[in-house]
Length: 287
Image 1: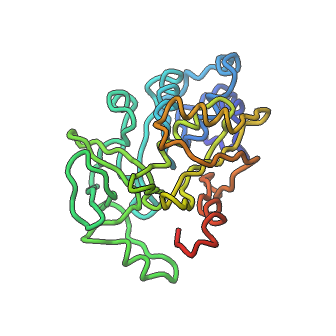
Image 2: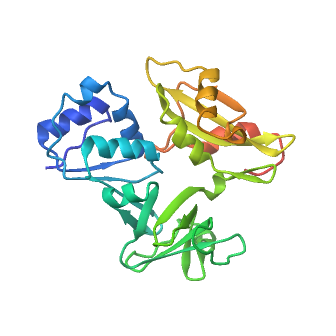
C-alpha cells in the first residue's frame, strides 16, 4: 500500500505511520525540522515501531537535526545524494553517518566522483571543490531546446553538479554548498548552507535562506531571510544573538529579515534566486 497525503502535516505524518503501519518513508530535511518542532507529548503519542527504512535527500540536512531524528526513530534513517542529471550518486546508513556526522556517504556501484578546483584540476582529500559525477547505469538526456547547456554540463567525461564538497581519507563525501551560493566576502569563502543549518535549529524558525548581497566594503555580504513557525515571532536581535553564540562574528549575516513565507518550487525547495534578485538588480553585477 502507498500512502500519499494531499499535503504535509507534521502530526498527520506520525498518525499515518501508526495507522497504516508504514514501513518505508521518503522525506526531505524540512519534514524532519517540522517533526522535531512538535511538542514532546505529541511526538510520544504515536507508535512508530513499524518504520524499517526512512530515506532522505533533496537538500542538505543540518547535522543536529539528523542526529536528533536518529535518536528519536533509531538507526532507520538513510541518506542519498544525487541529481536529476546523474541520478542517485552516494548513500550512507545511519550507523555510518553517526561515525562521520555530515557525510553524504560513498559512491554507489557504478558511480565515479571527482572533486575539482576552478582550473579543473583534481583535488586531494579534504580539499573543497566542485563535485563531478558519472553514473554508468543512468540514461543519457538533453535539455529541451538547450543543447549547448547540456554540452557545457559534461566535462572530461563527467557531469558537473554545481555542488561544492570534499572527500575524506576513507572515501566519504561531504557537501559544503551550491557553487552558485558561495559568498566571497573580503576574500573569505562563506558557505550559506553552514549558517542555514544552524538557523534551522533555532526554536520558532520554520525555515530560512542565507545568500550573498552587495557590500560596499567587502564586495559581498550575507543576508538571512527567516520564516517563523506559526504562532512564533523571533526578533532580529534574538536571531542575531542565537547565531553569535554558535558562529564566528564574520559568519553572522549583517542583514536579517523575517518573512511570513519564502517562495518555493513544487518540490519544496526555496527559490533563492527570487530572493537574491532585488538586492542585485541595480548593481550591474551578475548573480
